[in-house]
Amino acid sequence: MSSKPSVLEPLRVRVRRFQFIVGLGFLSLVVGAMLSVSLVLRLHARVSALPSDFLRIPVAVVLENLWVLAVLPALCYGAARIVALRPWPTAVGAALSGGVFVIALNFVRDGFEGLTTGWSFASALRGVAFVAGILLSARAIRAGRAAAEKGSAEAEAKAAARKSEYDEFLKAAEAGGAKLEQREGGAAAEAPAASPGAPVVGDSAATAPTGEASSAGETPAPPGDVPKTPAA
Image (cartoon, rainbow, N blue to C red; front, top):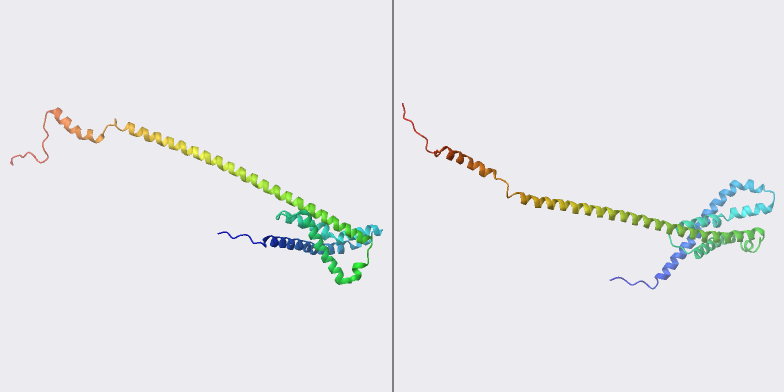
């Protein structure tokens, strides 16, 4: 007997989905942080050499938020190729998860002062980058789902083509077998028809000496009666 689905199964599915979204945001933050640090170390001299703050600040904000602008959309695209994800809930949830980690790190480093002070042009650009990352992630999920559906459709088409080829091969094999059976049946029908009129070799051979003897007018002597001659 099949067991009935548990009442808590939908709740478990939601919890697993929530854990997956949180893990996606945390992974994107970690990978993005490593990428940002490596790029900042390489481009620090060039960014500092820019003539105006209106150029330096946007570049710095982009390098700082690579986790939400580049890494999170890439991870969302890859995950959507495997798992059926909803675009907006996944994108918003993953971005908020990474943002919460960033705020927590800033709070541990600077305390409440780091949260209440420093609101400037750079802070506005960070907000714009965050929203742009959400939009890019949602679009990446849609693109991933479209690519996955296209791949499954191509796989189904290839499977249908192979099945049709196999069916044609099977029909050709059945037709060849039917022709072979017809040939064997015709050969078996011709063999009994030709057998009654054929001469019997054994009977002709047995009757040949008798006919020769009768034509000569002599009676053949039995094997046991050998003529005896008087001794000299």
